[in-house]
Length: 114
Picture 1 (cartoon, helix red, strand yellow):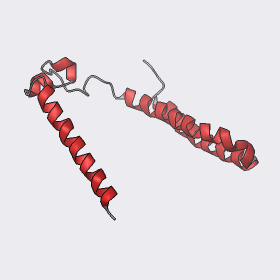
Picture 2 (tube, helix red, strand yellow):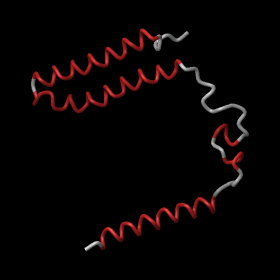
Picture 3 (tube, rainbow, N blue to C red):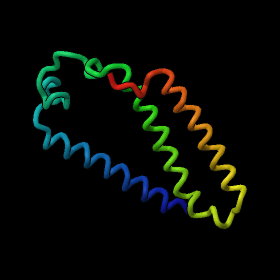
């Protein structure tokens, strides 16, 4: 009865173990300073997040707002003809909420590049 689940669990365990063994065999170095991805393995001289100004985080949030907007607009465009006017009203409410977020970001100076 549980043969399928047991076999899938066995395949997963074997896959994870083989990936771990393959990593250990092909690893370049076990030294932490050499194997760090930051600056191609050079010894870090600064923290990885210290080089970005805080205003870029607000710009990132604005970008994510528009990205999420597009994520919801593609499926909406497919079903808008079948749903009718209620779908159009719902989309304008959604866009209004996003506009409030963009207006807040504009007021906070997230769109200022100087």
